[in-house]
Image (cartoon, rainbow, N blue to C red; front, side, top):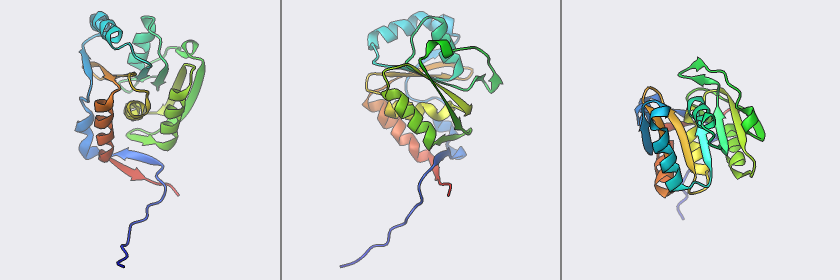
Length: 187
C-alpha cells in the first residue's frame, strides 16, 4: 500500500482578499440599479414585488439608510457608519430588535463575522450588525448563508446599487469568488 503525504494547515481565522484579484469584485453578479436611489426606487420596488423575497439583507450604509428611509423592512443589515470611507451618521437601531458589534478589518472576511452573519440569518428577529473596520466583502457570506429566495443589497460606489437574488447561480458565483482569498490563521 502506498501512503500519500498530505499538507496540514492550521485553523483558518480569516480570509484576506488577494489584491491581485480586486477587479473580480468591482461589478459582481446581480441586478444593477444605476444612479441615485430616488431615480430607480420604483423600479426596485417592482423587482422586490416580483421576487417576493424570504429575507432582505443589506450590506453598507447607503443601501441600508435608503431602504429604511423609504419604509422597506430589512431582516439583517450590516453597516460601518461610513459611505465611500467617509463618516455617515444616522441611527438605524430603532428598526432592529437585535444589535451585534463585530470587528472585520478592511479587505477581509474573518471567522467571527461569518458566524455572526450566519447566526443572524437564522433568527426570526431583525438584526443590525455594526462593523468596526469594513463591511464591503461581507456580502459574500450573506449570499452563501441566506435562505434561498432572499435578496442581498449592497452599494457599488459611484455607480449605484446591486440586488442579488439568492439562488443557486448566485451561490455558485459567490462560492467561486472564495478562491481569490488567502486563508490566514492566527495561532
